[in-house]
Image 1 (cartoon, rainbow, N blue to C red):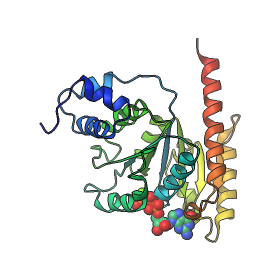
Image 2: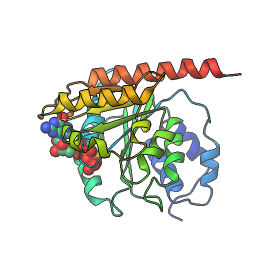
Image 3: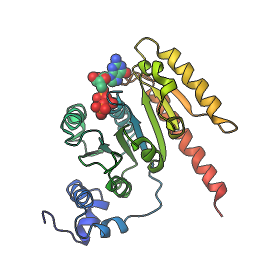
Image 4: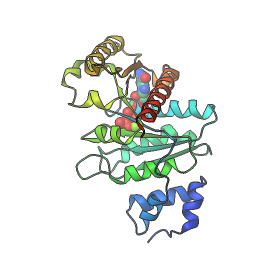
Length: 258
Ligand SMILES: Nc1nc2c(ncn2[C@@H]2O[C@H](COP(=O)(O)OP(=O)(O)OP(=O)(O)O)[C@@H](O)[C@H]2O)c(=O)[nH]1
Ligand SMILES: [Mg+2]
């Protein structure tokens, strides 16, 4: 077994020690002996939000995550990022891309980034993703960002797992909007039209708004936002929408508590 596990390892991870966090994640990912201890030692309830960022390949998810990290860190927050790419079995391309883009955070003590190279048998999320995300919530971060490529059932799984689910699309997707995968409208709490520096962005955003309004019925429709992730445009609005959504959800859940 490559790693040893004991109480102090979990304790150190919970105090935010990166090496211990990395070891624990590997143990969970590899379903190593004793990993249940790590999972069961984590708090079930947590005030640390898990923010899912999903969408088609190349939509700008990592660029958006990078911009969000920058902005949250500037506020003094500690951020964990989990990147999962269930679309490629070997994952080399996506991992390399994420590494290059997010490189600047590796030495920053306020940021922890981890990529998962495994995928679930049905092309969705690896079952360990859920445990690893909950584990990260308990390691002293103020928020956890989860980036996944939207393939197979992964968006639906992300929506179930995350406290807020942001679906990133690009203006070109407007042509295919009527063929959008069944259920996709339901998974997103916030729609982002990224690359809105490209033609057709505002038209696509208005189409999306119409769709969210008719899909919502009596409840509040999902928010639709435009961003240009590589120059930070729209990031503040996105953060605001995320905060509002989480706040509303908290109040709503509070009301429903027995
Ligand atoms: N013009 C423009 N390009 C962007 C924008 N956001 C990201 N890009 C570019 O789009 C490309 C893909 O961005 P990524 O952030 O890697 O996209 P991704 O969704 O994470 O990609 P995968 O993880 O491979 O699915 C990169 O070359 C980015 O620089 C944007 O708002 N406008
Ligand atoms: Mg990416």
